[in-house]
Image (cartoon, rainbow, N blue to C red; front, side, top):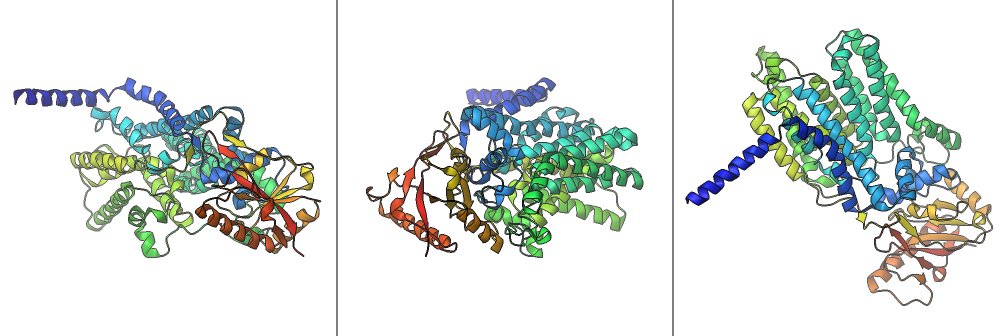
Amino acid sequence: MNVVTRAISRVDAGVLRLWDGLDRVKLLRLSMWFGPLLAGLVSVLLGQDANWDLRNYHWYNPYAFLNDKIGFDLNPGQFQSYFNPTIDLLYYGLASHFPTRVTGFVMGYLHGLNFVLLIVIVRQVLVAGEPAAFATARYRLPLLLGVAGCMGFSFLTQLGNTMGDNLTSLTVLGAIALLLRQWPQLLAGGVRAALIAALAGLIIGAGTGLKLTNANYALALCLALLTLRVSLWRRFSTAFVFGLGTLAGIGATAGHWYWLMWKQFGNPLFPQFNNIFKAPLASPIAVADMGWVPKSALEALLWPFIFTFNSKRVIELPMTQIIWPLVYIAFLALIAQHLRRLWLAAPGPATSIVAHGEAPGARLLLVFFALSYLIWLKLFGIYRYMVPLELLAPLVLWLLLHRVCTLPVARAIGAWCIVLSAIAGLPRVDWGHHYNGEKSFTVQVPAFAEPEQSMVFTVHGDPPMSWLVPNFPNRLAFAALGSGFPESPAFAERVAQMVAARRGPLFVMLTAGGLPLGPRSGAAAPDADTEQRQRRLYDAGHKILQRYRLTFNEASCVVYDARFGGGASDAYQLCEVGHLP
């Protein structure tokens, strides 16, 4: 028994030494250097990115932009073909010139910089603002909250991939970090405060231009600046200058694209918000996908609990998380506490924040977080767009608990809640990867005698086919029919014009999973499941092409090899298209 007791004592002592060792400035600084490197290595281990959006438009869009294919092709990547490709130029350049491991490492490293910005924000809000209360964990607490933030489901499932949320979150966190780092100057007013606000707006505006779904963060941060503890005039002027900076940032990263869309189609956000701009090629829709938002006021009120128990309401992947109900309950407790104090004129709990005054920027951060969530709830409802909030959630929960509980209780509850949330959120799935290879994409392409006289159609939106397009001759036109694009009568006329302008031959491109490479005619019959799947695919393709007075010859289909990285074959087939009488 004495041996067991001594062993347990040694383990306890070792854990305490490790715990104390985390509270060192050198360790915190090293983690800020090595955190992004670790993210890069994890990205390499995950393998070549193969997510649905990459297949659909993240690879096609920069290619089309750089090769004068905008308007030459007709939405090969469905309506997403017309999203700003600027953010994808980085991945396109890397994947075009470097092996998949290099590309994956760079993308993961950049995503890992969120960890650095998160630590900067935590230190400014907690340690710099409340040195007495957090003297015993001055370096350990920012490190642990930073790690917890980066263990969120959406951040980890997008690590190293091309969806853009982990990349543009750098601009959101960067703008917040700048405001907090320059907090005294921001409150002091004058020219320097205006420059700080404008620069913060420029940073978050650049992210908004790169990915429009960040507009809710820019708006929320602008509104949060109205809560600064300065005069009313200074609040409005700071928010106004921030807004001007945001517009400048949007113009810097997206102005060229909006102008191109306006010249080409008559809608700078084509095809979205076409109910306003009335571009002829698309139907008069507002936004493309509103199927993720709550369906009623009651659902909106209970939304964090609803998508915790049924993640399919906000994301396509099976997701486990508990951080959002905890943050939501903490916000409700804070609101109830404020209402009680107003009703009874009673003082709040003797927390460190009440005792030492409001931590610099904490109020701004909480207001920003709440407004961002509410705007997201109204406009999007898609979970992966919440990466910046997911990164900040452990810090926000810590702040809220220290406002509604006494210090010892807040520390105990906060520690357990954040640890359990981080563990629960660990992803067991991702958006798709393949093995690494020398090239990110390898596609077998047939010879075209006169590519400028030919045309290729796609007739199914899932799986997407546009990732194959950059491997074909540049002057070969592509058009997606019956996809998610909001087609109009003018769209059908454009298709007819493109067909009439070419002598042919014309082709339809279809997926070919499970089929042997080479001509379909004379090939061995596939298994029954593959044959049934292909029959459904052919029938659906015929039905869509018939709307345009076209058909295709199934006997002419030829299967070609295509691969992501070093993964298994992702074959496709080309079939000759003819005119219906």
